[in-house]
Image 1: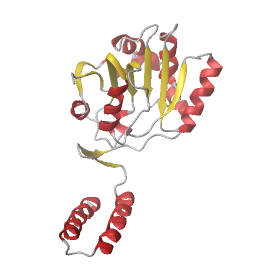
Image 2 (image 1 turned 180 degrees about the vertical axis):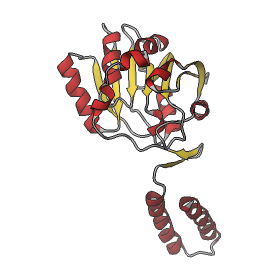
Image 3 (image 1 turned 30 degrees about the vertical axis):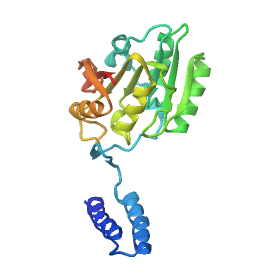
Image 4 (image 1 turned 90 degrees about the horizontal axis):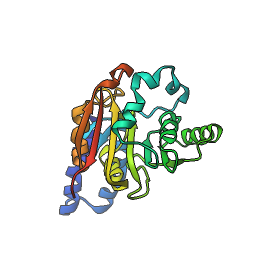
Length: 243
């Protein structure tokens, strides 16, 4: 509410400045103060031209929590990769890779000739993944330091993308998906696995994901719920719409 009130006040003062009623120095002072207010008051809330909703704080703790016994079976990760058409020779992006749990499984699946981009905004996680890849012999994993709205992937480089229990933490989801779209090869697929929620509670309703993906230029092609055994609600697969 504070951020919305500040935004309304900011718009009023900006209009006054533009009309000449407010001296320019005062306008500049307000712009600086208004920007600082938004930084301290918005918290986890996302504000873009397309959407406004809560966003969960990105996880920064130990990546060991992703390595629990039986996860492969409960998530049916081999079936997930089958549905995303991940096979030998393919290039895959694991966006929000954490400690590399999915990246190493994808790297094993795409041998020989395939590659996995492990994308993270947390450079400590990337260091963990790089160490793990060397230790376990996966020379086909490349770590990438992304940004909240850009995975920093080469254009036209990937056949499949997975955001596993990550989408609700993305600070600028529409921008991220738009930039991911640029990274896809023709016919490339994007998978999102998550649970229902408000966005700020480490989950996001599937309807919101579908809406944001549509804004970013994607259409839903398949939807599954077999991931419920791993306490997730949906596995959505998207492809880019025709330009």
